[in-house]
Amino acid sequence: MSLGQNYQLAQIEKPGPVLLLGAPGVGKGTQSDILSKLWNVPKISTGEILRANVSNGTALGLQANDIMKRGGLVSDRVMTQMVARRLGDSDTSIGFILDGFPRTVRQARWLDSYLNVHRRGAILGIIVMRMDHQRIVERVRHRSVCPVCNTVYNAQLMPPKRNGRCDKDDSALEQRNDDSVEVFQTRLNVFRKETEPLIQYYRGQALSIDIDAEQQPSFVTRDIVEGLTVFRKRMLLEDALPESPS
Ligand code: AMP
Image 1 (cartoon, rainbow, N blue to C red):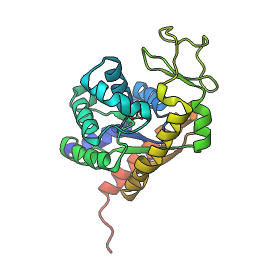
Image 2: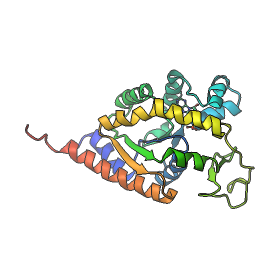
Image 3: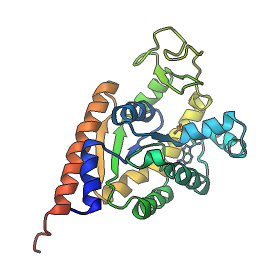
Image 4: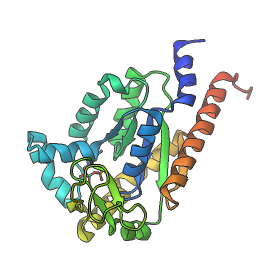
């Protein structure tokens, strides 16, 4: 058995790399946190890395802050450099969960060629999290986040134990400034224009799994884990079977 096939087999048990695709507010952050703990692989949230740069006042943070406050997208060049740097860290060698990247077709093409060069044989699992956009807007109104550990809460779905305080470090919870009604609407529009075409892009490569993200978070996790296992077994089988005669 080749090294590549060994790597693929290992991934049925410990699935990675995985990419969570879906509109802002659909629950990608919550699921990537859960999956990262479950599989013990790092999550790479480009939004979180950018926000850390903004709060640390780095050159990148200063550059990105205005764009983020308006709900726009940071340039593909900056984002691909950032992800390349993070994927160079050794903790990503077994697997990783991408949350919020890629967001444009150019970023997706870059990721394809990066994985081809640096992770040959890896099967990228693409999870498309779907939810009605009206419902997302409703949910985001109740969303708050811990500024210290980034844990996301939802007053209706996943409330903190103590009102307005983080369960983990007791910090005062905040609303993200790009979750305001107007900016969030812009982010949804940017998603429809720039990121939704990615669903087609990956569908063309027969790589994606659709998940109903409107369920309770634990059911969403269950569907992702089950979906990925079936998907990876199928991909391995297709790889192993001889091509059918035409
Ligand atoms: P998120 O936390 O994923 O909702 O991201 C927050 C903001 O960071 C987005 O609204 C964008 O301004 C920026 N951002 C995050 N990821 C990307 C990306 N892959 N490409 C461009 N901009 C991004």
